[in-house]
Length: 74
Image (cartoon, rainbow, N blue to C red):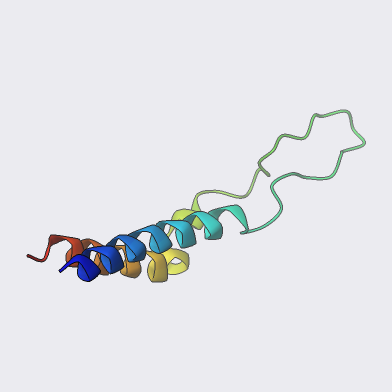
C-alpha cells in the first residue's frame, strides 16, 4: 500500500517535471539583438502557446494521470 502511494507520487512528480522540461527546453527564449533599435524581449514574436499542447506533453500527462490514479487507489 505504501509502495503504491510512493510510486504514484513519483510518477506525478516525474510527469510534471517532464512537462516543465519540455516547456523550458523547447527552443531559444530570446532573439539576437536587432540592429534597428527595437528591444528584443525574452519571448520571440512567433512562439505562441504550442509548447503547452498535447502533442509535446502527452508522456508527462500520461505519467501524471497514472500516478494520480495510483494515489487514489485504496
